Length: 281
Length: 195
Image (cartoon, rainbow over all chains, first blue to last red; front, side):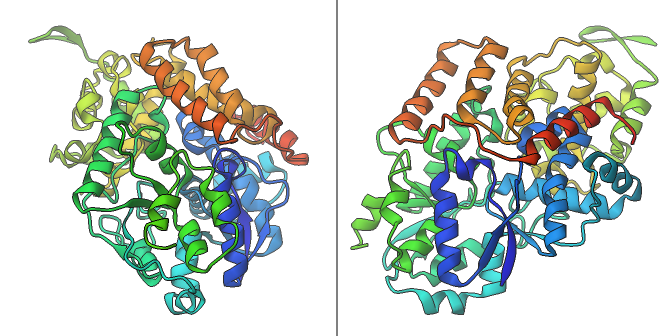
């Protein structure tokens, strides 16, 4: 299993532990990642806000390089995932755009290869049996909720690899790791995304509600698959008793007994280490 | 055309709906006001017009009301509305086209910090090819001049967390040829150059 790898800016910035845990876990699972040479930002939420052509050209540049590698691309950030997937979809549907992009990029881009989120690859390509076979420290007794947010599943004609209103891919994965994924009502709610600095009132409300719904089902931590969601959930919870947030890749690392989990947890605004330690992990 | 409403005289711009239809490619005429978009919209309670009313205002050609409202700026692009709309109306894309139109036509944004943020977000990307979080934050405050206690508290908390957890990167990422290529993409696409 070999993929072109698009890390995304957060994974070498503030959410470096998501990138590090991704690389370590893929190595351990036998998923080969080859980083896209000289990759650049996808434009995230701001590209399409400002200019539609730019919002397609920025991700397309990376996919055009991946196309030369002849590989499907894997990414871990949900925002990168939507932007990359959308650029591929538009270019396949629109010959005029393909021509324009080819000129702007000075290289051809036909959208021949797919874009996948790592969660999709681990559960649907590798499979849960292969994951289970690698588990040495089952996450027994850990009660979790899996948070999908927006762009893993919406809009479904571009991204979804599961039921957009009630996805269970991540739930099944953490279940395979031995943890207990609780059903809950906020799994596809919005965290407020890029409004953190501009409408923090709304983002506080959203994140507060997500944490409350997690507490309703007695979850000890929230599992995520997106650096933006994680940043909002960690930074915008209020009150003393904040719920820790943990990446699905970090949980894979813990369950497979990988050595660097402690280093990753130190980068969290609230470390999930204590919750896991309470279960002897 | 002008007519009187409860809130005074409003002006209908008969070309507006067609302008938006052409610019966005969004078939908003299919809307039958079922309110599914608004019921699922997390931001609806913070908007002056909920999404279903924006659609109606566009259909009616109430350009001034649409371009000067808060809705077109604070849509979170969560994609819930378009996922659930029985008529497959791409409302988030419509919001993008509407606030871009407002910027182009020099309408004062009802939520000026939002376009300031997005411009600040793109700035390090334009310069280095990738995001640089510290520069982006600084740029946001320079552009928005939003030094309200609410925003300073959020930025302060996040900043302290980033520093104490060793998350701040000083040097921008090295993207080799990518940097120049991204600069060119900004130039070409923002101008609308047709190669």
